[in-house]
Length: 237
Image (cartoon, rainbow, N blue to C red; front, top):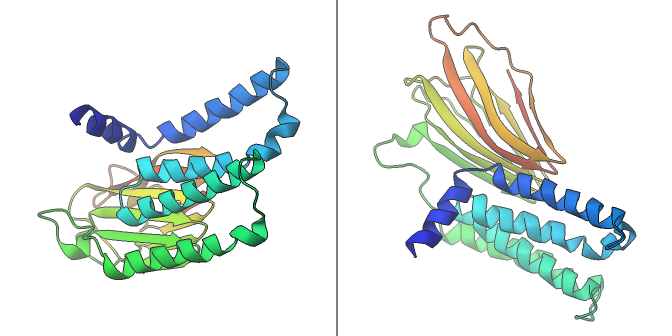
């Protein structure tokens, strides 16, 4: 049990592992095609694997229960479509589209009846945030003078974070982001230095914020950590 938990902790503590495995998988497909073992023109049958991979990534790499619930839904839907494409299940999209409504309803119920506290012990509630968008949009404006970071994720949706009126008492803070078929926009004050520690697969991180002189008084550091899979993260002032 301890080894299993340690392994999951290792994946969650290294958000670049999942995108790296995805890149390796794409390389393996091209290699098999070049060796005439597996032909890429048949790959359309395996498109649900991408949905399964995204779902598993959220299960392993997410910090919140709502994201892990979304991962379960995406993995199950992807598995159903994969078995159909391989001829093990004889159903059509007209039969399966209600799964989207069912999944959305499950997430709505989860968010309604279970609201986890994103604030760790010893932190002030106004200094932490946790925001998630799934097939929709979310916006958060933070104005605290004791900003301590938080978590944001966008899956088939968008998240807007505005920290321009916030300030830090500590020297730095960490924001964990996840953009999967979605986008996250982050606005920071002019005296914050943004340090992106991220990875992306068919997506990207864009930092157009101004970087002040590190030796200037009052300069703080904001670490942006996470991944973008078929999505993007945009940082600006």
